[in-house]
Length: 580
Image 1 (cartoon, helix red, strand yellow):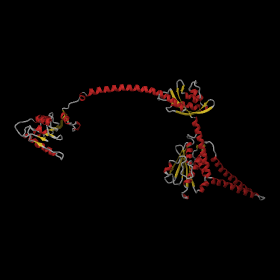
Image 2 (cartoon, rainbow, N blue to C red; image 1 turned 180 degrees about the vertical axis):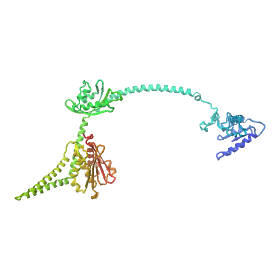
Image 3 (cartoon, helix red, strand yellow; image 1 turned 90 degrees about the horizontal axis):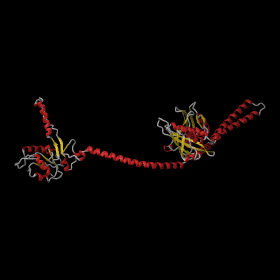
Image 4 (tube, rainbow, N blue to C red; image 1 turned 30 degrees about the vertical axis):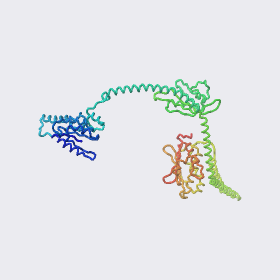
């Protein structure tokens, strides 16, 4: 709704207003023009407008009656007061009359532009050469009171809009004072709340600490653990009552470091003393398993764990730790190791049982040769003038074949022998050769060939030769089983040894079988898991246990050219070995 007067000035503005509105015309916008209404009708007519109307008031110096002249600002006051829809204007003089606002060229900006022109003329500029000034810096200006009347929010205004007649709130008038007062109140409240909370926490912590100490002492005694604390300056050892029970000390005995060491087995006293010295120079806990002489003459195992806090500048004065009775654990470990040895021996016997035919053939060959040479010697002794040269050769053959049979028997006795592991210097090349010799007839029976690439002057390793031979024996047997469906000409097993720069010895054993399935690779070392119809699932598990006991590692993988590869890595003799 565009409102304007009927004077000549009004009509010029009407033409501009109509062109501007029609330039923004759209199907959603219905424009009406009230240019012939009398001033007396305007308030009543605008009071009946719908709420979604936009009222634009131009100049209004005269109405259609032309019997009276008006001031446009006064007309804007009457229209804005009576209108049922928001009113907008085009002059900044309309602000403050109830008009919401508009995009104005203010008289102030006009005056500033005019003053700039005057200053240029006064400074001597040629008037004819001065450019026209049409940029009067218009801007959006609104009346905050009118916006509040119509429920408009300032956040929806165009950027850079000027808001006039804004009534600041109490917070805006005294923002810093109110903010400072609120901050002081909040800080004081926080301090008071913190003090009350800290007081409550301290009481709870004291109660919880007492309960925790009681629970810890009870739990430690229930788990057969004794807690202790050493004062380095006084050498006094405080300990819970269960520590006394672990060491078999009377309740009235003074516990010092010397008392503790005196109850330790003589062979383990240096270990116990070293553990305590380690806590005085290291930030990490010292752990050691020691034996104690439990009254009257019983030997028991105790695990000592000692630790202290170090600031990096001075030695600590306090050392704390625990004693744990691990006698039952040590017995269980010994029983478990015995069972492992029994299973390993059983696997060796089982493997030799599978090789019984080959072993019989290996022994039968030298025995047959011995019989033939003995019969030949008897025949040569029959004539009156026997040929002692030939007889001597026959007897040498008998000795050679006897030694050959003896070697076979000795190798079998070594594999069948039961007992504790004995670590000694072992030549892995010799282990490979002896294992291949033991399996020679089995390899012939299965039409398999072994190719070796053994590094000369290979460093020795520290280990049990019988157990290491058992590992190779099991891997070669598995390789022959894997190549059961491989053509005879391709049944080859390649074994090589080499020394690495990291101080380890590696053995590679490759076959030409179908390889290892992806689903089986992660489980081949799991006890009782087997891919063979007649397998027990213990061979590779025992191999892994033996190699780990020797401080090494074993891995099975598929080769890029086909088949599977068993890789064994063992520390050289000069390196620390866990099996020691």
